[in-house]
Length: 306
Image (tube, rainbow, N blue to C red; front, side, top):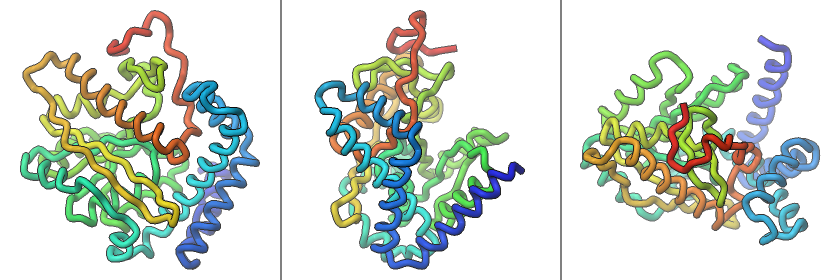
């Protein structure tokens, strides 16, 4: 274990302890301040955010607009961190008070269909809280995650998710795919975050007017298993309560050409992700280098990279 990993883990546990012991409003205010401090101190991440905003919005936002938006983005990150840290002290009754929803009947429709569902979303709002809320409504959720480099922190985050009744599937561990298939056969909801650069394993689509490499796993799993895709978003309200909005299930056409169907499904859910971000850009995690260069020989929409 690296010494830096141990230090990082200790800091995470100390902050989590503070967030759990403080009243919710005070804890979230502290999280907001920490997020703003990160914006001011972590210059490389701030630069990434500003670059992404330039690409996505161009001259439709002024430089000062983008700086102000960056402050809100990092503030939201800090508040989200505090909310996740508070999972062990958040009772189900409190969860249902701070989160409301529209379209929750979509989950019952998926349950009745009987093939499980793929909850395809993005790093938008407190997506972890949305998963916990869906689980609390009685629709069991498994989070598909890629383990972090710091195993101590990764294990702790997994324990926070489990404290809300959410199971964890590691995509980068042996047997991960079997666990996904098993969960779908058990009629569970498998949550997949699908908004980051997918590199050579991705499918080329348009996002904010730019060709990017998008993960093809959600659509591939849907076509392979027949499980519908469910999209939705969780919106932060001014009082730090949340409103979830869920779309109707997106069913795969199992008679269609496989590659064409993967492209169709991927374009639909990615378009919904983009629509949500345009609506509330301060809620998305702009710190990731989403708009990485796509080589000229691969810049055709729908191309499956090898």
